[in-house]
Image (tube, rainbow, N blue to C red; front, side, top):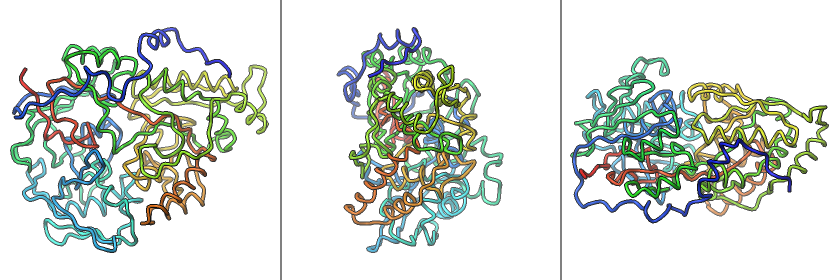
Length: 539
């Protein structure tokens, strides 16, 4: 096996100072603190948000930092427990007809928007029939299956499907289906509405201020429909661009929570030994994040699957897992996360094999020039912290070893989102969520009908395979689990052969919190939940 490309000395020093892997929930000292019996009212939660969100309107943007902040402002009809069972949120109850085509939702009573206007079934119908259909990358694939969405009265909404869709009850997580206020948006240009600067939801916290580059402040909504909640007085999301400063802020108690990749993986083993902190990997079950390299098939030679396969062979994904992510993940085998329904491991394998990568490039006629370069492309790292930049350094070096010259491009979160959505990239890193069922979180990436310029997290690679389209549609409709498995197994084999993206890792994220913080991670949505139940003890 060819030796690994050398990374920077500083990178290697950091890697050498940290453990390669963590146990499933870190050392014993990192276990969540047992909560006292009675929640304490009041208190300010200071949490990290990294990077700074581009905006806070969940219906317009679903990037990770937006979801974490806006998940306290907006709500959906349902939430989900750790076993992914649906639980009440703005819907207090629901029924499904025997034929699986009619879903009736009964709304909570006494719900108000943050501006005092009443929430009603009209808002639900507007959200699903109009707003999300225009703005959301998954809405057409999910709610376009409805033949009708009707308000029977102010607190009852009926969704009628044109055909069975067994994943339908999994579609109402808040980033999939944030309820939007009809009285604010109806008849307007949704993306240009001036109220986007001051988001209005129904959640336990309302927007107070956003000081760019410093913090986002949310305050408890006194008319929240869950009486007596939230317990917290307010939340400050602190914007701390520097990774070392984020880790120090946790250690000193300046902030009480980090999530996703706020803390660089090489810092996690040290922080979880701090007796004032607790760490958990729970709360990411619903999203089951999968990281990959997005390959723009409109750009030559990325349009040739042999080139995409060569990229897979050129990358040592175990090295990425062990030395860049420090054990926080599993090497991916294809488009479905191994913790998501209908995963099948029996697909083509891509072990680290630079010689095989070179052979595929030779087969394409891409011979190295005098400098050893066969092809030149640009790589745009995900701008979510130092680890993602280190991944970019590794990608550049690993691909360079087989003759693919990579130029690294830098951008901020908003710029990355615009460029990814508008196909303005050769290769970029991305991290997408599975949302409990392949029909919701997987199909959207590969369906040719979801090639939608200007909309993030769609089929931005431009990949098109009619058989894949057909199989995804059949699997989405199929009610027999065994037949669904057979369809998804066939899909995984085709996609792993075609390599529309270069799958890297099934990510596992550490949420690190002060031991003073209780009842924050209560569902499979984790840090993106409302935090209506979260509270701080006084000690």
